[in-house]
Amino acid sequence: QVQLQESGPGLVKASQTLSLTCTVSGGSITTNHYAWSWIRQPPGKGLEWMGVIAADGSTYYSPSLKSRTSISRDTSKNQFSLQLSSVTPEDTAVYYCVRAGLYASPPPYDYWGQGTQVTVSS
Image (cartoon, rainbow, N blue to C red; front, side, top):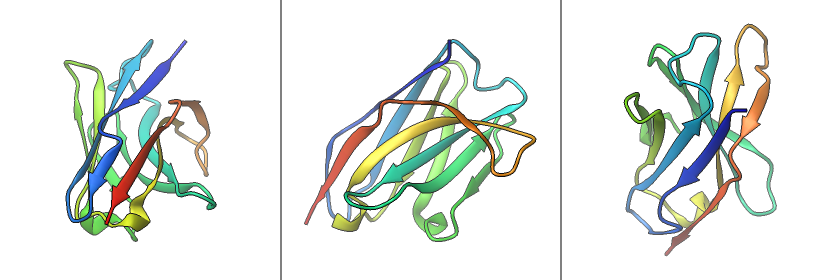
């Protein structure tokens, strides 16, 4: 069973950088056929895909967030991370790390972390 767990500060001040880490167990983030995504949900709004890192380390980002989003990984720890710079209160959301299957469009999201609330204070 693959498990994902988000971790990081729950409060971030405006203009600072939001940084979260996803720890994966039960499967390697370097295994082919899967990619690893960050998705968020602001209060009262729908899910928003932020970006993804593939098994080979390639990254792709939502056009609306690309300029201030970075996804990286630490293969020795089987972790991948999210950094979102220059945050504003509009970035307040529940943030999820998610495994994405490949070879389908849209990709299936088969395993999710429980989500972590991040609040940006003005």
